[in-house]
Length: 192
Image (cartoon, rainbow, N blue to C red; front, side):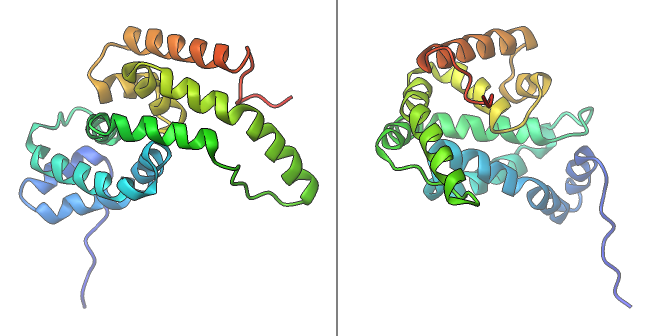
């Protein structure tokens, strides 16, 4: 009878186990690759996303002995690595936002009436939002998008980027203010 290896709990346990059993690190890939792919795909598009996610895990694997095992969740560490890799592609990211200014709205909505309403709403803010994101300083954009698209907490963003939580808050506040101003004072996350 062949038994499957037990699924380990905390990410830190996987990292620690991978020091002697390198294949244990693959479970981190299984847990987080889709999440990282969605995040970077929104920022740079699907073309470079797969490569960057793969590169993120290669870097993480090579640095696994330096991981702070007191943190059970490896997501902030992985997002931090990915964000640094994305920063090398800042021109591509800005070009993606400029392309979004010109692209038609891609939506999947149930009814024709919903499709029209969603299309009008999305088109109304798409250009301004893409322009606002492109105009943000990279440090502010990283914080804003790690929270909005990466679903990280302030503490996790701080760990990911190696900055104090107060800096996370100030960058997020500044980024939100600039995006809100570019959208004419509206919040695209709130429905009317």
